[in-house]
Amino acid sequence: MSKNTWRDYPLWLKALPWELTGDLRTPEDVAEYECSRYMSMHPSSAITLIHDDTHGEGYTLHWEERNCTVHGSGAGLLYGFYDAVFHARVNSREEVDAKPRYALRMINCWDNMDGSIERGYAGRSMWFEGSRFVYDPDRIRQLGRLLASVHINVLCINNVNVQDPAGHLLDTFLPDLAGFADILRPFGVRVMISIDFAMPILEGMTTADPLDPAVEAWWGVKADKIYEAIPDFAGFLVKADSEHRPGPNAYGRNHAEGANMLAKALAPHGGVVVWRAFVYNCKQDWRDQSVDRPKAAYDLYHPMDGQFAENVILQIKNGPFDFQVREPVSPLFYGMPHTRLALEFQLTQEYTGHQVDIYAMPPLFEEVMQAIPENAISAIAGVSNLGRDSNWTGHPFAALNLFAYGRTAFHGTQDSKAVTDLWLGNTYPDLSSRDRKILHSVLLHSRIAYERYTAPLGLCWMVNPHGHYGCSPYGYEFDVWGTYNRADRFGVGIDRTSSGTGYTLQYPEHLQYVYENRDLCPDNLVLFFHRLPYDAVLHDGNTLIQRIYEDHFQGLADVEEMKRLLDTVQFPEEDAEEVHQRMEMQLHNAREWCDIINTFFYRFSGIPDQKGRVIYP
Image (cartoon, rainbow, N blue to C red):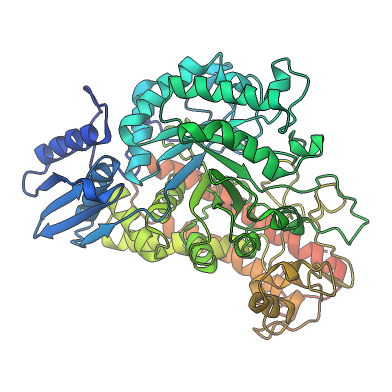
């Protein structure tokens, strides 16, 4: 593993190799300081900052040869400075008139106060340890700089599965939280916390019923105190009535009633409630094939459309399951036109390789953003892939996912190739043209390669239970989580059409028609929507079983080629060893997936590979 400290590791900020010191209280202070230091190191070009209050959080870039003029104010001026640096590093002279596509652009951190991070693959928490705030202020300033550079403006600092003593962030730890917020404020980053819906009970009340006046008053007092300490506090993130988390259903109340009670407490202060729509019955009986987990969120929330307060944002995962390798877009994005919605991505690679296997997400972001109806969402959230590792993201290439997410959150849909080029040019400016082309190609191919050797054709959940890394095709097949593939000797997949579970009926008619129709449904989702026999013929002419074999053998070959190519790239010393070690691990993982899945389906189907490749009996 790399031996450098976090201060030495530039991520994509290599052009700004200095510490942030001095009395920096506002984003404009930071912009002026950064620009002054940058100009002292790059006297042959100029970045000029012009204060202009007409842009809000937006900015403009105007170029005259090597010189750039940035117009903006507040956070917008700082964003414009960073964008000018990024473009200068890749010799781009693009004229930019940027306005934020989404006003709330959040990173959700699943940090626990004991220092662990749920589904964290880049080390321990940067600000919690031993059930208290413990952090290096210099590193938190660098975190603020990192987030501002891609225009993130909200950081939710603790796990949505709230664990003690995080319930005391509203009281005992409020001074510490305020000090933490003070460090991030100059970068235009506001803090948010995840709360436990049952907090009133944890502090001695007999109920957390959202319609109980005493409960409403309790939350009102809490809100007043937190805004007295942190005037720009962003609000609360809530996971309720899912995976054993408490919620309003315990009192016979619906989620709109629960969310609106909290929203009322925050409204006088301008705060928002971000209410996660990840809700399903997590004690499903595998014998009951009429219950279909992907239907749960729509069934619950669609009837409540229009009932949520204005300062409630319903946060919806990009797919109806749980950040799988490939899912259709959640039907809730089509079914809640009168509710403020947030799109949630998972940057931490829980189901996509644990930041060991390379899985570049720009194509995923682009695909999902193009599929969601225009103006359907008003906010965007990404589950953090950051940690205390010296390189911040475990695998150095995982930093691309944070970079691309931030630019997507601010600018809207981003071209995968262009955003990857911009990240490469700023992260590895000293690579040769040949090496950069290799890395660009590997990154953009990594998603399809991972999909091939793990779970192609819309199959989900064939991972090792609990840890979710590595292959276990029947690992979740008979459990309570509702994550089944129903593979047997006749076929595989779940019929989610109108003649099956009826999940397709949650989509608008034009999508129902595509997903219901076997001839129109895309192959990469076919087993999500249909149950097929092994001799079914797919669009490419292969039978289903042969396509399963082809994908897994090709996925392994893809990783072998990725490793061969990356072994020829002259990476900086601080990354070379990390990349080599993780590629060795990915190759092992890909081989296990290939052999296990092929054998699994061969044993069911009894049909050999048409090309005679080795499948273990």
